Image 1 (cartoon, rainbow, N blue to C red):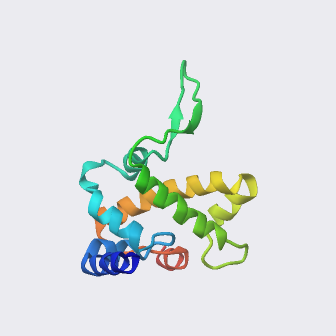
Image 2 (cartoon, rainbow, N blue to C red):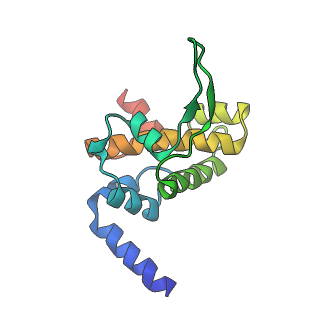
Length: 151
């Protein structure tokens, strides 16, 4: 039963060009890529920030009188997509080591200051923004090494 389901998912992933594009992002596997490709219309969102908020990956805003207070993660939006991003972020964090060419300096500094699960949610927020940008522009993911060469 599960083998047939896995085969159907793999076949659907191979035929979907958006899913093929998204799988190049670290932490995004075939199931997450296919889920994003089939359920998200990126033109509905003005920016990646709005997309991350729709997924429920932004903190609650409890501001008043000019004083900004951010609460916990809102958890509004699509629970399944948010879960896929957080699980993917945990996989990226698992292999993030100082001196690694694939780990970003931002992530390593965050892991020094914050617990792993909190860093995973922050990374999932960043991944959501990147996924939105990839879906709107149609460009492949540019890793840390490629971004350093280009810029």
